Length: 299
Picture 1: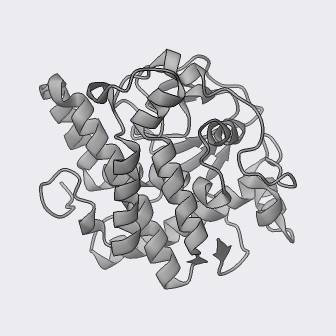
Picture 2: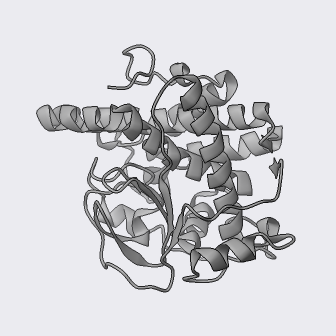
């Protein structure tokens, strides 16, 4: 993926790497999901801890821990920084995601503000409770932040084969999709429905996650069409592979568990891939109707 410019705006980033923080993890945060939605399965998370760089780019480094926003801004705007540093690349993806969605929401007459992108290492405190890197990248609707541990993100990719830099863009765009669900009022509606009918909690979670997959695809389409980024067919496949790699059935198979659809909270590999592709092909938020209740609306 190439960008229309090389300017990086780090003003929306909170870099907590090397700053300590919370410890342990909240049972209310799901892998790749909105905080507080479904319980984390601890034994499942433990196997994610591996090693190596899932990007296959040996020259890429994570960046500098615990920088002030001004220092991150300066480093990420040096020549070649986006290609060299993973954090700079992710901040640039975040910037482009913000630009596309702010325009799309304005076109639809919807209120919009960006989430905060929070880098952390190991563990941190969040509005959804204390969190460990073992929960994976996640969005917390309480404080409207996307949380990323870059080292663990790479390990996650290595473990499940979701390699490629555009796979990371998909992961960030998926978490950004959860922020859009919060802005649109979808996330709190789902939370209320889960509390009212616990028997539907997993099914509603799956629908929420697949909608975020679809919204990640819509972003890719809109960003490419607007010229913010240039996405190749090979990179689309990276995102599709990443969506499939984090399907519940694939994770259960990878961890030696019995494939049990009743326990799924994110959906099957094929469904996650299908919804991402639906979003990317259509470029239309209204195509992301995973709940079967009509077009996306606020409220």
